[in-house]
Length: 264
Image (cartoon, rainbow, N blue to C red; front, side):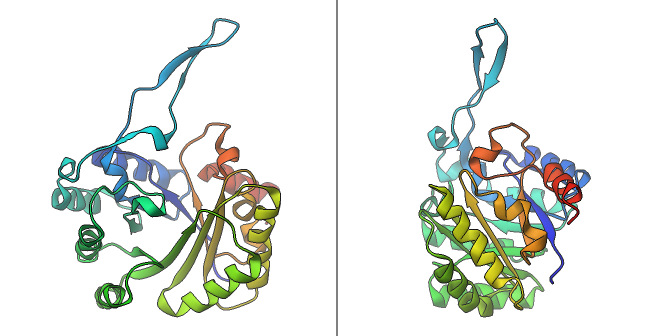
């Protein structure tokens, strides 16, 4: 069974906050962090103050999909890359997600790929290359990453959850293109969550390094039980609110505590 590691996906929206979040993630038990570079274009609003029936107030943040996304010029790309690579001491994965894959990058695909190319020249350890990248472009990025000693994640993000057999077939077929294969889909019902569990169990005794997860209720099942499913990497968050379970996400400390409690 492959060594199971935990990667905290950084959710900050400024460079300095992301560097600070990475340091806290490292102290909280993360083995590595994911730089979600596309989040730097998000315009994070102030939280709303709501009052309950007892007169107590609390802050409530609006959903991210309602936040404004700034123009491309909002981020000084080269300076941001340098600051993140120099400031983050943990092992890093670089990701810049397009809008059609659940990300926030406002530019063209050509501009996005140019940033991936620039990141590969800066001493990162991992790079996330989506399954949908044009094959000829992917080949160039893979070659550059290999020459720099960077490990490659092949990722796919689906708006609907396919059957377990389709997931396992895609993961096996994609394994030749990277060092780890990531599959993530939206969960709409318990059956969807079970497809992810079944796919994980079908792959657990093989040689492919993979990470399977869902977004939505039940999407955290494969994260919570990753140690007995043969997964190689679990994505976690630094967020702590109770609603995380409804999103299928889990806090980095909580997932490690759960594994210890379950004696995994």
